[in-house]
Every structure is written in structure tokens, then in C-alpha cells.
Image (cartoon, rainbow, N blue to C red; front, side, top):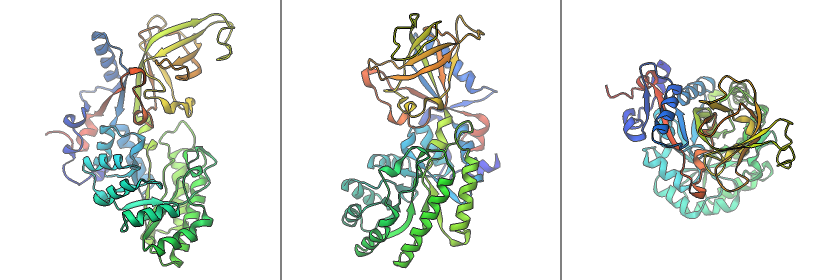
Length: 438
């Protein structure tokens, strides 16, 4: 845990950043585990005649991800993407670990500043900003921001002329689940003109950013993007700009069971950085990881509030081609309108684990299942082809890997309450972070 102590923020007392008082964190002492916590929480809800869904946020997992990052990508400083999951325990953990923050709106900047984040540790990473938001950033000392078009440059020159600008370029993201370059980024063919316009407006362009897309499945995308950034740096140098920052964006996964492993991506990035931006270039290199830190850190516990067995293989044939046996439809108390809208991105990335089964404990028989959310909208469906042992009303499902773009975009549609979050941390990590009251 010495590495952990070394990376903890020195910006004031860590205790004031993350503590049981300011984010209801539960310290797992005396050998207690997360499973023990979940078991006790379910029993507690049962005693209160409640079946409200809840998240368990594993702070240890976030800390391990950070140690993995600084070990594997030593030249790249993470600026956590606040939009991915802005729950208090997550943000306070990132602050304690000393990361920077990628903010995309006035509200996100306000939130970061309210928690004590220094303005120089924020990048306003949105290329299309409202004028009032740009002025807010200027007033509060947030100077680093991105752009990708001439109209944005004009706005910035009027609202924040001393901003430190980062040119976002479009890169090849065809191998990503979500292609961000369809919406953002200047093409390489327009770079000359954009930088020339920035020079005319007397604006300071300090670097280049890119994003290979969310859920990138091809590590070579980073190498090509870094090579493209090198080309832009060379153009900027000819125009008299002193570039000092490279932002390699996001698109990282912290999981080992899907896509490309983080170590494989890191190896490609490190090699490309050494080739195009040698370590003696005194360049600041940052990234905007979000999913990497929190996806596997959150587990959702949802209750089976209703159930329907379909025996007629002609019923709902438009939904699912079922077996001659039976197909079961389950209705959970959380769904796409609640915490799980991003599950539509790739349902196979999530794992539904039966918890506390009643009559079928130990049974190997599984049935094809449809899992619905609780609302009255028929699109509120989590999966329509999942094999589970038979569950019963009152049972629970644990849904793993639900920390990314779930909490942050949930709603209370139909009057269903937002899912509560219970952060937990082991006593060992708590003390290593110097977070105890002792």
C-alpha cells in the first residue's frame, strides 16, 4: 500500500475529502466483505418491508484502477471524466487520488469547484459551449478548454480571450461502440485554417486532443491518433504556437473480460508516445478516463417485483423465439429509465447474478428470460435473451459492472425513486489512504 500513500493528494487533509460524514461511506472492518454488506442490506430492507434497489460502490476497486493506471501509463495524467459518474464518493475518491477533471458544462465545473478542485486541474472538454458557460469558466479561473471550429474560436475570443486552448481533432474511431468523431473534432485538412484564425484572434493554442470513441476495441486506433496529433503539432510550430499539451481522451476499459485489455492499449500508447513525443520533449500528457475507473466498481442490487411465465410459444413470438418449455418474464424495480439506460449499448457487457434464490437454490435448470424495468413503457427492457434459474417475486438480482453512464443519466420517470448508492471501502485501504479518525 506504499504506492497508494504516495499518490494520495497533498491538497489539504484527505479526511476532509472522503469521510463517513460527507459521503456516507461504510468501512468494512473485522473481515467483513462486500457480499456481507449486500446480504445485510437486503435483510435490512426486508425487515422494513422495502425492496428499493441500491448500488454498492467499491472504493477499493477505484483505488486499484488508479494504481494500475499510474504504473502502466506513467507519462499520462488522468483527468477523470466527471460525466461518467458524478456521485459524491466517486468524485471525492478521485480528488483524494489527485486526478484532474474533465468537465463538459457549467454545472460540472461548479460541482468540481464546490468540492475544492483547483481550477488548473480542470479541462473544459467540450467543443461547443454556450457563451455564458465560457464566461463562467473565465470568472472562476478555468482556462483550459477545447475547440474544433472557427465559430467557437470567435466566441472564446469575445468571452475568454486569455483561455488556454486545445484543438480537438477527429480521428479514426470506426472500431468503437460509440463514434464520437461523427459529432466532434476538426479534420486534419482544416487544421491550417483553424490555427491561422486562432493566430488572427490572438488566442493561445497550447495543445491537441482527440477521442478514439467509447468502448474502443482496436488498440491501434490510439497509435494512429497520436501520429495525427504529431502532425498537428508540427503545423502549429510552423505558425508560431508553442504547444505543451497532448490530451489522448478516453475510450479505456478497466475490465479484463471484454474487448482489449488495458495493458495492451497502454503498450501501444507508450510506444506511440515514445516514437512521436519522446520523453525529453517536456510535454504534459493527459487523458480523460471515466468508464475505466468506475464501470466495474459498481454493483446494482435490484428486486424482482413481478413475474410472468409464458407457456404458449406463440405468445410474444415477436419479442422472442422461445423453446417448447417455458419462457419467463421478470420485472425489476430498476431499468432503462432509472439507472440502466446505458445497458442498451451492449447488454452482453453486464452480468445478471441471481441472489438469495428461494425455491430453486442449487438447481441447474435455466430458462430463457426477458428482464424488464418497472415503468409502463415497453422499451424499458434490459434483455430479452438471458438464461437464468427460475426466480420468484421478492428475489434479488445483482447486476455487475454498472458504474459507467448509469447513475449520471438516470431519471425518476413514472415516479420511481432514484437508486441509492452505498459506498464501501475495506479498512486496509481506508487506513492506507490515511482516512481514519485516528
